Length: 239
Ligand code: ADP
Image 1 (cartoon, rainbow, N blue to C red):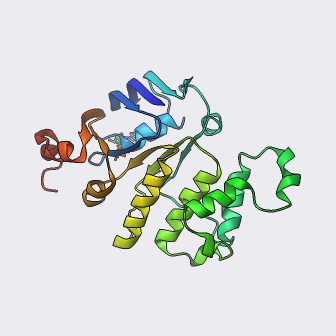
Image 2: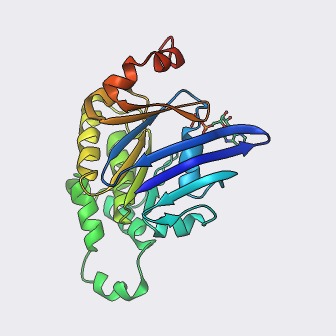
Image 3: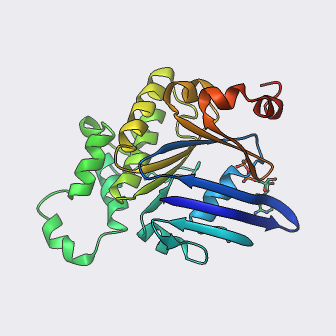
């Protein structure tokens, strides 16, 4: 599904990614960890077309992504969240979902839509468990609910690959648990890559973890394997 080979990104002579190889099979929930500056955001930027690699290949579902524009990559089915919120506070939950879905909606579906919310929106609402809040203004949502809405907005765009940046940051224990379950369910029929630092969360919800360090993949394996690896312990020393 997603396949990166020998990807290099250079900023003013500094190698932010230095030969990254990464394969994420269809339907996998993959976690990406690594200390600050390891290259995690740069990697996501390369996949989504925000940063062009100096060398290497980035393939997704049989398409070569290098050189494609961001909106073309979205159309191929790649969605991402950012650390900055994209929720419109003055709109309701369902209006936010509808707006997000609209970015991919062809005009001929408008007539059909007048009869009710689109299937994609209804599905995103159910998946994220926000049905009861559909008519509420997004501005009154709790931090966790807002994060789920953002994931819902991505789902409403019907992506095949979701790239999520620290989805449980700032969440309560219960919200984290619910998010872990949500991600596992989403991975039933999507490929999901999650940047996340919270080791406790990884222990509970991660199967495969890729550790980035200094622009390279340091280790890849189960949470148990990765956290027991001396190279990883050295990188995270003091944590
Ligand atoms: P992470 O997300 O793992 O914390 P980043 O991908 O943000 O790491 O950054 C990797 C390295 O690349 C860092 O040293 C960062 O300072 C550098 N970097 C990232 N973006 C730029 C940029 N636009 N210009 C120059 N250096 C950058």
